[in-house]
Length: 465
Image 1 (spheres, helix red, strand yellow):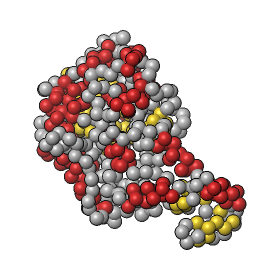
Image 2: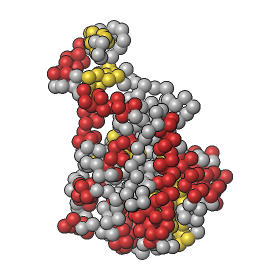
Image 3: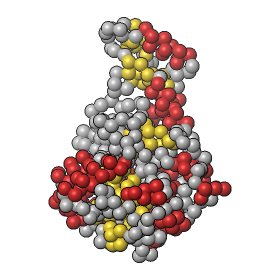
Image 4: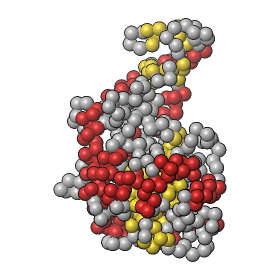
């Protein structure tokens, strides 16, 4: 393999390998600090990160406010305190080596407030902010206030062009790099557009070359692109190195750092990663953000899929083929469905899925009474963790609502990600992962259940294997 030469990123020569940020207590100060100490760029997540009590135990994020708005304020307080805590841990751990970035989800609740809150208290500790899942137009403006570099996460040259023309051209000197996150291969939330087919993955090379062309038009020939999603062995990307069509290139690793000694995920999660097979990670659209996302197919995802399969369209009055009365709800009110759908509904009821829940799309889903009770409780307990939530209909706007009905086909993302991050079952919670996660079981380096330190992983990556 060609030598993996250091790259000047944000004014410093560094190994061009970057830890990808994973939210809700997964990319921590410990993991990011260790990555930076090994000579790369470590990334801690400021998406509802953990704070600790005097005994060093994670403080549970519990909510006591009576209204969603009250609980939303509690959540932002947790997020800012957690981000500050993790930044300080990472700074101490890196011992002056590498660089430290903070990762923010633009569609998280109060993203701007969290950035200000953390950066204000961590001056000199954080060198960059990465941000995706949406169009973070204000990222450059906020980064400039604190003198840190910014790294937008995009999935196309078109998206970057929009960001550049609207905002980033005003602060080009602090644009440290552009993260291209492959929408078919990356874990977590993915930036698939309506014109792209989730079942037809595209080769990232022409997409990244197109991104480089857009950047070159704007005079950004020396600004690195950071390839994220699907990166495992760098020798598979050798043709990208020293390639004028790609330009300065660095590589981001999100899934591989999960399986390290410093990684905070549970032993059950680590064991599950070692036993994944090709195809075990699914691209789905159940997230309350409205984005596609990639997660391990387990009992949690299976239940969401079956919940949506038990779905029929209805109308309030007889309309066309919807001419068959069906009694629903506690009051047994009639709605109108097709004769075939009434037969399907009766079969689901016979199987124990006796409760109906209306969706925003004039459909009914059939669930068990305990599941219906769980969904309603989660919707009522909403703490406003997203800028807009399809599951609960929360929005951080003045009205506090998206204006749509809450969607029972989705789930409380804060609840499940907090659970799995704090030793929840890997079968009964959402487990984000990149589509290459099955390679843990195929890579001979992990044979016998070997779990490296972050330092060992970074050194291994640098060899190309």
